[in-house]
Image (cartoon, rainbow, N blue to C red):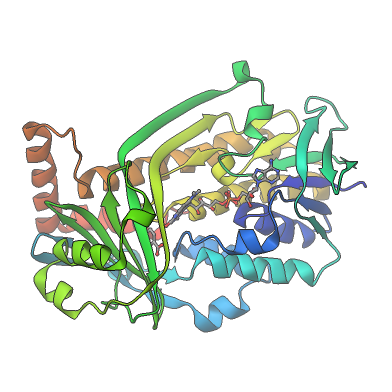
Length: 389
Ligand code: RFL
Ligand code: PHB
């Protein structure tokens, strides 16, 4: 098989890239390790920046989103018993869109199904060859036979645990990492959301987040020790702990119900540099991870896809290579700002087990500055709705 671009990984990055490239007649194959059902079963992000929505429209994958997604003009912070509503629209003239990553991935698969482009699921032993040559290729195992894809370029969209990043010799990459000493226990429930806005809550007992997918589907999270297991948390224990971390008036109006999904995600900041090596370009979680505070994960993956799409379309249209040469530099400039924001927001809102009394005082001072200062709120709003690209 020969294509212009071999895409490793059929998550949001790989699917969106493939869809955008088709607009310019650039062919691709997507090689995905899991089944489609598995990919669609993962409950992840819920907040989309306007740049993400714009690209989904360009990719012809936004019909359902345009009809069903919720638009939020503000976001709330609950700090002990005070609630601060940050008017995103007023500060930035932009809103955020509430639409689950599961739905987004579903729509991208449907859009791909409507084209000739191939997606091969359940592949194994994906190996990248000739990254520093003009004619790279990928080999993989499909149903016990070894297959080969010849291509001009390879897009490594295979997430944090994928093989693409590791295919770059270790002496050509530098890694930056911070592991946080807690996780998020998340619950999805068929209940009406407790509020019209998302609520990021900070209490002495730790962080909590009230989010949603639609008028009858809520997503809640609480900070938990890394040693906890989701199965150890009964539904009752989760709802009790969540209520304790919310201001009384919000806790009183929370409607709980059976958890239809319950999982724990560790929190990590990670960046690899550069995001390209020869004919290989990394996109999304393959190159960087952010903690979910601020919902930057999938949105940052999408901004990478945008820069790579731009570089590839210029290359195939005009033979212009600058966009590809500068891909890593352009993508990383935005990535690091998302890493900074999600690190800052995580530090502000969580209880750190090893926090000194000095650190706690600083955290309290920063919170009270944010409550009093509109300029600080505006900075939060600009980062939350997403920096331009
Ligand atoms: P993905 O979604 O991980 O997709 C990568 C795909 O590559 C496949 N793969 C391979 N395929 C072929 N060969 C191999 N060797 C392969 N190795 C892996 C995988 O099966 C997978 O289908 O990366 P992508 O496309 O870059 O998208 C990034 C986003 O998924 C990610 O940034 C967010 O989901 C992060 N994230 C969250 N982001 C938010 O903005 N808000 C959230 O609330 C939020 N919650 C989360 C998250 C990520 C989580 N992870 C990674 C465990 C919760 C969790 C649990
Ligand atoms: C979610 O709805 O899953 C969600 C929303 C906002 C975040 C993280 C996760 O910051």
